[in-house]
Length: 271
Image 1 (tube, one colour):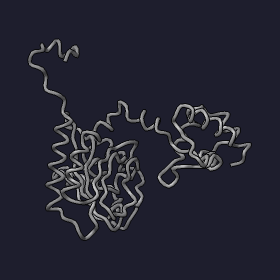
Image 2 (cartoon, one colour):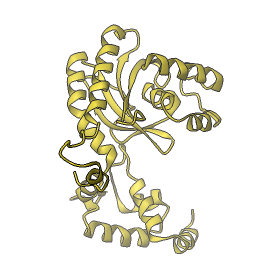
Image 3 (tube, one colour):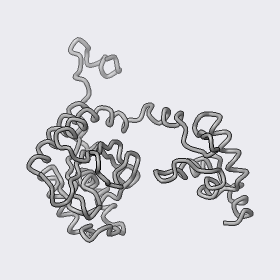
Image 4 (cartoon, one colour):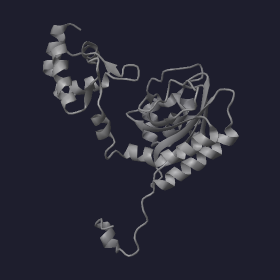
């Protein structure tokens, strides 16, 4: 885009929209960017990018390193951890993920549905494992991951149908894109309460996942382990996953009512 077009576009946009584009310009391969590159990736004129970056840095949301490159600031991370239910789930689940990781020795993840994709909240990785998917904060297509298939299987039927009626890209030869086949697979996952999905997102890896349910029995997250394909140990993994998933679900349950409080007090929130 030319500078004139960028200037005209910037003039029509809200400040929040421009800031959102700046923040979205960073990723795992581009954690620190020169101003000119950041402006290009955010599709903003360099003077506009400079002004916004300066203001964001003043509030700690962005930082400049010694080479003048720009990166996400710690203040942004700090704010993102406050009052976020998804991160509460991550904090509750982490000890169980660590036990599962120690027990099985395989890549272990925690994921949730967000914006029509899987969003990974946690990942524990054994030394020497080279899996470029399922990093913390990374997104993945729902139908191309064991985590996504479990999340979809236990989601409301209306969301399932809305998702299955979209065009579904094929990522490997084993990615299933036929809605009717996917419906049968989702029904099986609901019956057995776990998924085993060889090669649907990465051809050389098999994911196994189980649901984590909230106190109202709705799906809130999914727990998974990933094995090199051909080296799966479902007999060990599935019971361990189910035990961890059940423990996390129980930990998410609200506190039992205090018997010394009246029902009227509890309804008014006096706990």
